[in-house]
Image 1 (spheres, rainbow, N blue to C red):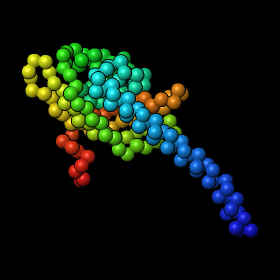
Image 2 (spheres, helix red, strand yellow; image 1 turned 45 degrees about the horizontal axis):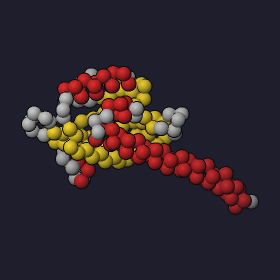
Image 3 (spheres, rainbow, N blue to C red; image 1 turned 135 degrees about the vertical axis):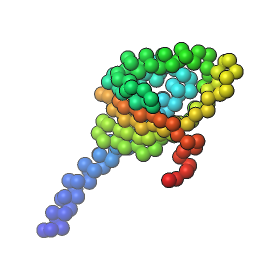
Length: 163
């Protein structure tokens, strides 16, 4: 009788676990799609494409600034930054993300980015590294959007030096 109970328990649990694992895998794949879109938008300095990746209630936490709350404020911040960089060209941008966690419609990950930006007035190129913590929400349309972003500077090639 005990074996039958264990067998029935397994029959009840295994399909639920399999569905949960499939949802988690699908969520990770969706976040990887989000990462590719974020990389493409950043490489081309396309503010509209970047803003399409933000939730209406998103919050950006950048160094030495007040929290930037809401999609409109984040868009204004990006537009102001773009104006200050008039004529600048993104020469290269690399985004590597790790530790994707999915729980229902929420996901998180940490990333390291490296960008090189050239300026039209012969200023030295900007060659910077950053670390990001991203929290995402899956909308009813199935797309993942940023709800929280925290960024700070990183050491060059931060992901290859274990600590």
